[in-house]
Amino acid sequence: MANMVTTLFLQSEVQDPYTIYETMLNENPVYWDEANQLWAIYSYEACTAILNNTDAHIPGINGNNKQGLNEYALRITDRLARLSNGIQHDITRQVAMLLFDRIKADVINGIMGKLLQNEAGKNETDWVNSVCKKLPLAAVLKSFDFKEDDCCFISDKIEQLVKIMLPGKTPEQVAAINETSKEIYTITEKHLSASGFYKPILKTVSEKYKTGLNETTSLCVINLIGLFIQGYDAGRGVLSNSLLQILDKNGIYSKKTINKEWLQRSVIETLRFDPPVHNTRRVAVNDMALNGVVFKKGESILVVLAAANRDPEKFNRPGTYNIERANNNEHLTFGAGSHRCLANHFSVSLATETLSYFLDRYKTIELIEKNIRYEPRVNTRLPKSILISFS
Image 1 (cartoon, rainbow, N blue to C red):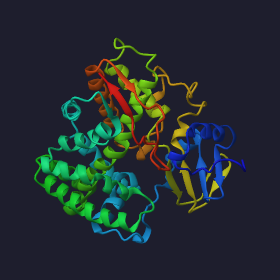
Image 2: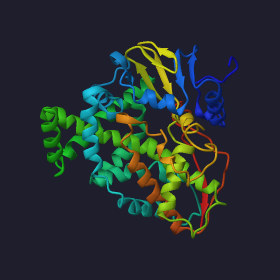
Image 3: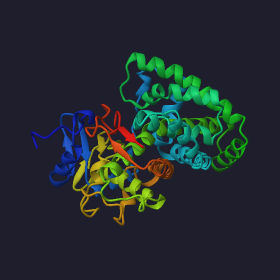
Image 4: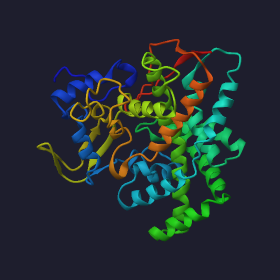
């Protein structure tokens, strides 16, 4: 494996990462990357074992605040459900689940109507920038009844805020994050405090976990901000890749076969076959063994979810896009166990409703440029643009 491409690479520089994953699945499903000083895990069985292991924690991204984040940015990074462990994770997960009850799928058609109205007179558009970067966040904001001015402000600033999740940040990015996080935190806190559904959430969480009012308030605000971040990034990826797969497989469907049930299965298979999130990280907080290998305390682990989703030991003919495969929904794109991403059902519903609206409205939808370029990310594979024509 001396000539193997490194386990860490920018998605923008690799045309087909799945050939790399296939090689690793066959030859080194649990691999020590000496250059990057981490374990890379590729098989479904091994990935699931790590994701469910209580000694494999989600690492922090800003130890000792070396990046100089302000108090608002620190609150967000320290308390998001996706970054928490132990009792703290249980609390934030409960808050996030309660917040998800507020998200209304029926707002999506209205948002799509406005977005496509802005494209009136055109017969082509960039699906990523016109829809995917706007709709998921707009759906969350509208579901929580944010004021129009606040919606516009958060939508304009979200691209700066999502950089809070980057392990490395430039001084300029830190400055923008500090300013934006304070403003968005303040807007969100003020809005939730004035909302009727807020008090029951406070009461439920405070009573169950014996947390104080301030602590519970902060958790609610931060988890809603977490939805903003997930909507812009992961939501964008699900919408982008789902349309790509449908257009690429246009020989397997007709207008007669396309309905919401078909689309939902298509979205779920896309999340397995071509997910937006390709890997996540863990750190061993104690020594632990897997497949005869000992992970020592403090060692880093790269869990390659996209490889696990193509594991032939789990999925029959995994390199074939097949919406009828019985276990497609067992993909690991949203993780597993207690740390399974809470946006799962929302992401599937959002993509299904959006594609249903779009495909019903237009008879012909085609890719203009089939050579898709991707953002320079390590953990996510997000198209930079998808040029389509429609009529």
